[in-house]
Length: 268
Image (cartoon, rainbow, N blue to C red):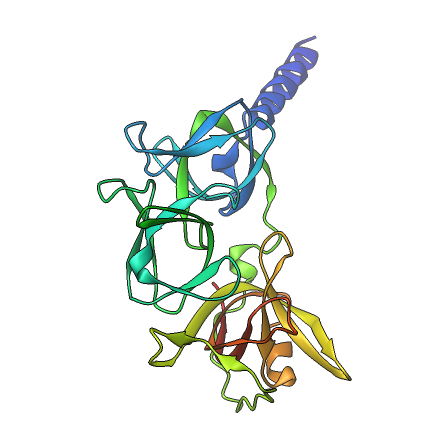
């Protein structure tokens, strides 16, 4: 009888331990799921910070870290931030390029609102709306918000755990781009643009004749750039999240701008 009681107690304690297992038991980053309706994502780890928007129950979000009872999360693409228009040079369609270093991205179109992140010279920005001297933009890859721990449950690990991502290495192979006749996008009409872009590198982008142009896509799979460089070099980075430096080239035959690649590294 005592053995039966001990076994039952052991099973109860074991089950309870697994039931209590939450996000704090897993390695960052991971995919979390919102467990309540209209949950605020804020610009800092406290309710006093600006709300960047509300998330619906069941929405998934990438969780990167934790501070006290708050989780640091990637700001979803459907939310918006704001940048002063004087720091953006027009590019193609509803997009622009940052023309200064360390430009503040804010929670509201107000100089006194919270600084959420910063953009860097050459970074490509998707513009959604112009509000006076401010531009409403899609959050960049390095934009993070905060969600109260109680409103987020663990869902699953990210596709590529941090400890399995290769260390960023600069290639020593010479990049010899083969460029068609295109217009180089100027910065303030004075010089060619040293662009910076981040995304997932995928093979077989734009096909022209027998040549295949790899492409850079965002998290939704949308093509944001085509990459013009030595394909054997780019193959080393295929299906990884990367940062690319180079010159932006506009060609009406392409659905997205092209980058003449000068440097590429895998994001850690």
